[in-house]
Image 1: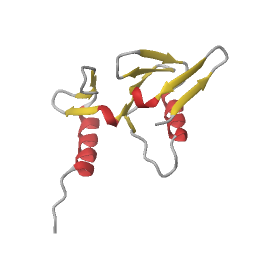
Image 2: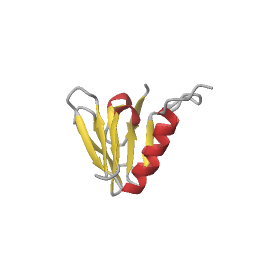
Image 3: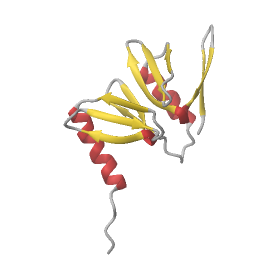
Length: 125
């Protein structure tokens, strides 16, 4: 998985995308959280981060990152539970690192339907 290199006037930040659990909008900034719990804040909006993620992937290779609403981008490789009733999306590496996120019911319903349609067992003809 590619790394995302962000260069500002004062610092260079290498983001290891394979280890990022999610990106979350924080005003004009974006906080990203590694699956291990380490957090960073960057002086870029979530839309700009989304664009950089898209540009870092090869054309034929699908990105594991999905945008959920205005304030969240999650790494689908860590999605382990979608609970519409509790309005909770659980990201986990199944090694003790868990990140429960609060997401609206509407977004979770839509996302759950998409994920199920992709991963549902196919009936054989």
